[in-house]
Structures are given as structure tokens and as C-alpha cells.
Image (cartoon, rainbow, N blue to C red; front, side, top):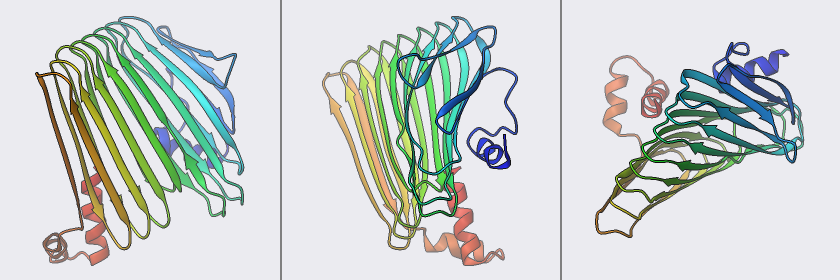
Length: 305
């Protein structure tokens, strides 16, 4: 990898080189390399771009990394990755996309990730998006996540977009079986003229299943954000969706949390809060010796942590 690719890899996967375990590395629109482990198999799709990842039942304390790097201007791709998580697993999947665009053409990555989480399995999924480059071409990322959870499974999904993405539409659709739990944690920061839209839709179909959707975002300059969430309680279940946003400068934020109870024992809650940084917070930090800008950065860092 050259220096640009190494920097992108570090930003989206916290890696300085490819790991010892299973991984797949996609660079500039093509699968560059992949590696299996004893319990994790990665198979390149034959009919369309993407991979199938098979994690054997009972696999514990293993991880798989699947970073995507775009370091050339003008690349536009849609990639389909399917994850088959066996019963009684306990694994971590680390994904992410980094775009370096110093040209005049737009670069775009759309990843469609479908998860089949087996009975009793436990999965942590981490996804980071990052953009850089001083060209006029935009850096566009449109991730779609589809989740099917079997009884008593657990999935925690952490998505982060903090820098450099000009436009993104992030879509998540999930269906939960009996006793399944889905936790979604989202962190987004936009600046300049950037646009970010997230759209969560969770169907709580199983008896005793539950979800908790949490979004934290900061909108600066003239950027725009839209948060949509729809939680449908179709059985005895529990659901909670919340959006907290800090708005600055001339930015705009729209939050539309929605809950739908289709069963008498569905317990659903939604919350949304949008506001500026409190003046007393700034004053308190500035009395400790920070400038106003440093105080703002410290508050934002803590909010998105």
C-alpha cells in the first residue's frame, strides 16, 4: 500500500497493516486481497461486486476486517456484502470506507451490507466513514444495512462519520425475532456545505425482542442533516429511539423519530433534542484557560465520544 492508502486504512479501521485474522481489502473498485481464518470464510461473489462472509457456528472471540479504500478520483461503485453469522457466535466485524479525492470528478461508494444473525449469536459491527483530499470532486458514501436477527441473538452496531464526507444517505432496515436485541449507536459531524441523512427502520416482530437507537450529531457551518427513525412494535417488545444534535453557525438539523405500536404489549419511546452549545459550558471551560474555540472542540469531542 502507498502512503495515502495506509492513512485511509488507519482512519477507517484503526490498522497500520492488515491483521492476522480474516480480512478482505477492496481498493479503487476491485478486491485486492482476502484471507480466511479457521472459522471465517470469505468468498468473492461471481454475479456482482462484493463478498460473502461465513462465520462458523460457535466461533468465539474472533474478528474480521473488510475496509474499502478509494484513492483515485471519479470511481463510483456499488458493493454487495452478505454476512452469515452462525449460531452461538461471539464475533466482531470492522468495516469502513475511506475516500481520498484530489480530482474534479466525484468519487462514490455505496455499500449494501446484509446480516443474517443466527440463533443466540452475539455480533458487534463497527463502521467508519472518512473523506479527505483538496480536489473539487465530491466524496460520496451511501451505506445500506439490512439485518435479519434470529431468536435470542444480539447485535450492536456502531457507525461513525466525523470528517470529509460531502454527501451521505445512510439507510438501516432490521427485522428482529423472539428475544433478539439490536443496539444502534450513530455519530456524525458535518461542516461546510455537507449533507447527511440517516434513515432507520426497525421491525420488532418477535416476542420479547427490543431495540435502542441512539444518534449523536454535530452540524457546523452551512451543513444540513436529517434524522429519520421508525420503530414498529409488532409483538410484546420494547423500543427506544433518540436523536441528540448540536447545531452551530448557519447549519440546519431535522429530526423525525417515529414509533408505531401494533400490539397491546409493545412499549415504545422516542426522544429528540436539538440545540446550541450552552453558554455556561463554554464559560466554565474558558475559566480553566481554554479559548472559546478550544472549549467548543472539547465539548463536541465529549458529546460524540
